[in-house]
Image 1 (cartoon, rainbow, N blue to C red):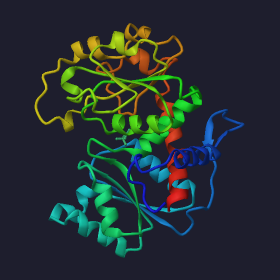
Image 2 (cartoon, rainbow, N blue to C red):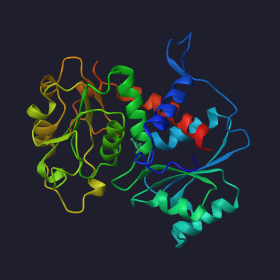
Image 3 (cartoon, rainbow, N blue to C red):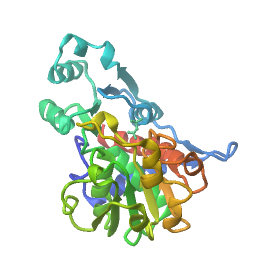
Image 4 (cartoon, rainbow, N blue to C red):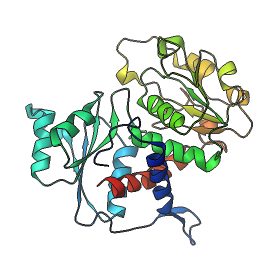
Length: 308
Ligand code: CP
């Protein structure tokens, strides 16, 4: 497994191997009674470069922590202070890091296919990991989302997962849908205003139904995945009144009642409180948003251990 470019390229067995390995890094600390991470030396003498052309908190920090938990060295490249600002191309930046004996380059970029492009440049070495590219791929997020879903709803083939909000600009949505289908989840709903949905009802293929209202879309849901309005990726100015959006498409104490009473609420983060989700729900007992963050480190440990 030289590179991790997208979910599409993974088999169900490969996905399950990553999830199983991630669970091996987690334990409950006797003192704090909280989840903690095992430390190993699987990345001993290996160097991981975090190359993020877009802002990130969760993904960048969790990859750094994951690499350090495995005994690796981590270099965070501050793109704003790098020679990118002097006009250096992505190709030349990557070849420069390769020449410095990097073992892994973790890449976040606003353009789709960037990870695939640099994997082609690098050939077999160093390992390239996609940390979110454009509007189509965020494989490590999809894996941590699957891990979280399986913790709460192990019967994934029979549950209904509803993904709500800015579907059109969401690499989280497209990667998670691909991952859910790989695990034979048969009831996937995507819900949002028409302007934030793909044009074709057939866009996501079989097992995916598209709704423009929460009442129908959330009916019988076991899992609600709430998405941020990704204004930075919107090509045109969308006139969306945020108060109205919360009322119509937000996950609130009113709208959550459309789903099953034991539905879990997920969000990849960062959350915009009282725009796509009310604080009451984000901090409420059905929310597993911070669990996703905790599991994200274990997933990234597994990926680094298996791919580096
Ligand atoms: N979910 C996610 O990718 O968050 P960050 O942008 O903070 O990494």
